[in-house]
Image (cartoon, rainbow, N blue to C red; front, side):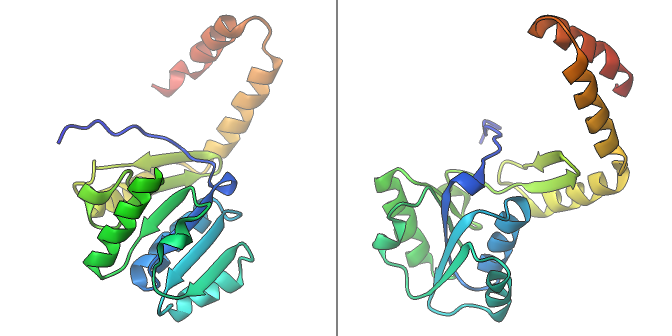
Length: 189
């Protein structure tokens, strides 16, 4: 497999997200969605839902819990689907239904059924860095995230705020501004 993934940051709060699975994996995926985009409209469907998911959903009125088995009508008006059940036949069915409707789908721990992977994320204020191993090792991505979190200074937000202020004061066309900002930030090399 070549490294041909296209990195992208989605405005999840503008999308309708379905999570299928109410166990530990469902909790992990719901937590990741809400940590990055807390206002996202999320539906989580599973015949059994962990108490931790219920507690998290209680803090987010935009999360709807559906205590039910997967049915294809759950895909109506959904833009993105994340699957995390422990039943391979269900995972495959959801993936096939999503494909038929041209809905992007991620099936946890099954790269061959995924249209996209969820990355490990480093956040320092407005800076967000996504880490991917091309589906090879989520554990490595997690460890690398931990390394970056430790070495990146907390003062990065101040740096970003200063660069925004400078950019807003610059005059000239796009190319002029770009050259000036490149000159200012070359000390970061």
